[in-house]
Length: 242
Image (cartoon, rainbow, N blue to C red; front, top):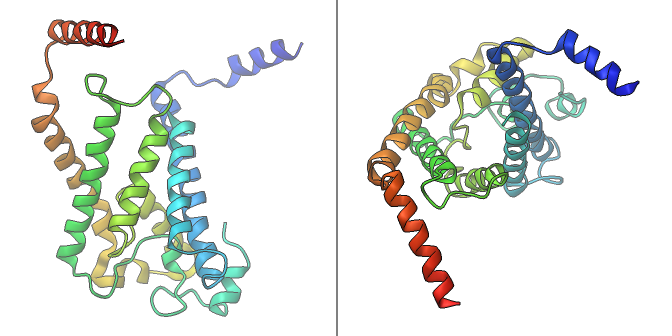
């Protein structure tokens, strides 16, 4: 009876168009990423470091991305206590940075753009290596874990300047939320109109990373027949050694 009921609901509600299925999967995946990632930032900021630190933020985004990848492939009262009811974008008690990225004081617009290009290029480069069946690759089902570890590597090595948004969806959507939730237009004016850097920088970086992987690695893969011969030879060598 239960299976029959599920079948009826599936017939009535299941989407037929792939584009709508992909939209729902991406929507839920990004929600989980921002939930865990921004949640870890909120916990660290609002507790003034008592319940969080940079490492816990890195872990939050890493695990958030891993879970988002598996799924797709809230502001609490503490916020008002922390900022005394004010929605502050910059300064010591700023809370807008919980949701979107803002540059450190030492970072210029040009250097910020380069920071995002390099970070996104590194991410795409590593993802292509992880998912390349003609390279070593990652075991099936382990790709999200490996990609999460790439995010962790980027976080601990490139997070000083502005965090590591490296994804337009991760930064622009929460920034739009803060703009309408009380922080206002300052979320777009802060940091010398910083907002466009984490949107366009990763796009450029993605192209750069993909081009580098193609030119340095993918372009030089052996053809299918030669690859199969190499695999047979490697297996033979392993058997001989054992």
